[in-house]
Image (cartoon, rainbow, N blue to C red; front, side, top):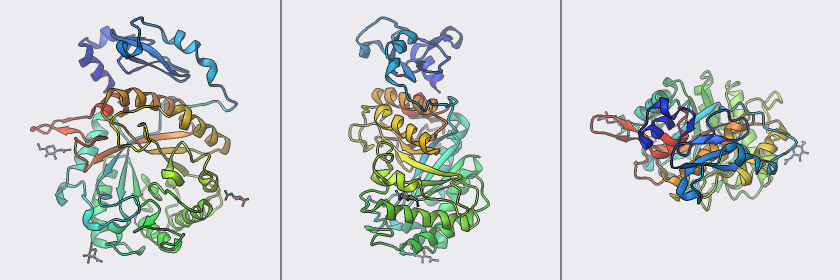
Length: 414
Ligand SMILES: *[C@@H]1O[C@H](CO)[C@@H](O)[C@H](O)[C@H]1NC(C)=O
Ligand SMILES: *[C@@H]1O[C@H](CO)[C@@H](O)[C@H](O)[C@H]1NC(C)=O
Ligand SMILES: *[C@@H]1O[C@H](CO)[C@@H](O)[C@H](O)[C@H]1NC(C)=O
């Protein structure tokens, strides 16, 4: 999709642009073997040791076409550390959040079943299934995260017992996701809480939360491409060691139900921020969580990161690629501890600033794919195309889907 964007931008054929990187394309950085000069009107600009990018000449304050080699050489001394990245340049997972079953949840974990807005035509919602099929076929995505409120799954009962009617509705989306061949993340979107009360710390007992996971994992225990996302964005937890005990209870429940091989995502405090998990103590506590056999196989650290001024994912403009403040220290921490992370929420407005910083963030993640497995964009599904961070494709009257700018120019793997 990057190529298509470049072609429509400068109106040339594929052959004539060979050797020149597209606007916002990569043009240099450690391990980069592609084009090092930019199309007309763009300048190859140093971003970090792993990434130089073609930016519009007007925003770089110069019209000269500096080469990536020069740009990189003059700054390359800033990033050297003992544990060097051994990324392959390709991530394992490229995903999109297909939101909707989590609608009606707020950040206190207060949700109502009635507030859910399933991204399913058969329940009068948007065509989330058509979106997933498009993302896989046209864009090369291979992962979807399917947020859902705990209350929806249990029919507004504070229990681990699934409401069969509601779970069957959610499973329609899960099965459609699996049918695309993608990996599908079950994401309990409750911020470590049920109706305002923290699990294991005044709210539902760990055993109740574990029972919820026992029932979900029993249903999907033989499905290889299911990923268990223990909890979305815990925050303001009084005790991160107690929280790690809650996560341990969920992991033990999932594995004991027979789901022995799938990935399980472990969420830390502070909204699972990639900028703090290695420093706020919650990551350290999560490192102790184990499978019942004592191993840590397929226990993956879950991290989120937005690129706007307050890391909230609510602003149309982006101000950072998070490399210095989050991805670089996170990658070092993961290597030191022999662990890997998955970035299950990231995104930005469909704006030039987000194009610039998101492309740069993704290039860093690719260069560090030994410890960063992939990213999942926020969000499509039941979000309208007018939502500030929308990755929902627009749909023509004849059913032709066109991706949002950030998807087509940065986030889509092809
Ligand atoms: C499922 O939950 C709904 C409320 O969302 C309720 O009306 C229904 O009776 C529940 N069904 C079962 C089988 O518990
Ligand atoms: C992790 O486990 C070790 C050994 O049981 C313990 O000493 C340490 O305090 C634990 N760390 C955290 C952060 O809970
Ligand atoms: C696009 O629109 C067509 C009708 O023109 C509809 O059948 C289809 O479900 C829509 N697809 C998506 C992904 O919204």
